[in-house]
Image (tube, rainbow, N blue to C red; front, top):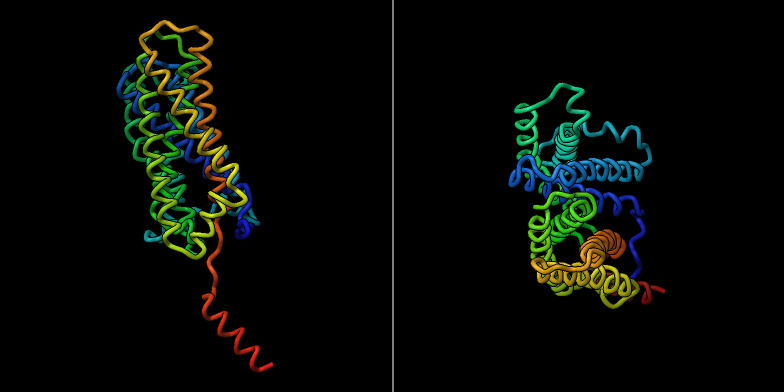
Length: 323
């Protein structure tokens, strides 16, 4: 049922995942930092460094896709058209990366001490960066979907539902990444309440992602043509096993069940191994599902026919008569 997209390689899909993960992680720790200032140092520090590393690696993956990567690294300087999403996105990524890096540096004790940033000045700087980082994170998360939707020749990507789907998925994977630090690294007794709040967020995000996914699939099926063919490739075609298995089952269902179990048993004494394995397993599955989603959407992007089937049939009929 249709051929897989072969114009773009694996690098853009990796960027779409890492960019979304970066945005979701920074948004999560920014909210945590503003809600609980001065607390959960290991979670905040881990989350901001994940955001920096993920965005840096994602940009390198995206740049490596072009023929002249070293020139592409400075291409943003030429983007002066304020009405172009490509220009807006380039500047947005530069601004977000600066905010993320500064936040990571100021969050790390040794680095902050080395640059003489202490006390109230450090607290104020981190608060300002957290406030700036929230809209930057949301914009980066949305842009990962807008980047694909700028290819109108691929009907599967030419819909506002794709940025919406990628944004919700980015927030989901970001919470999952931060959850790993909350479970494995943080020793503050109050972290249990934060973990419960993040599990509730996971439940809401997975439910919302399921709704957006259903709307996306239904809309593309109703559009017919290449869009319907792409959805067919995902749901019943060559990609149905990873779509239903890796994304829906592993990436959505398992994290949802894990979060529900954690919330339901939050006030009960549970085995330490189980109390660690369930959230870690759920978070890992959410990351796998987020990565699978980007690869699947990219691979299923069937290009629209340049000439309509009716025209092609007429041309073939005329050729037959002439011959």
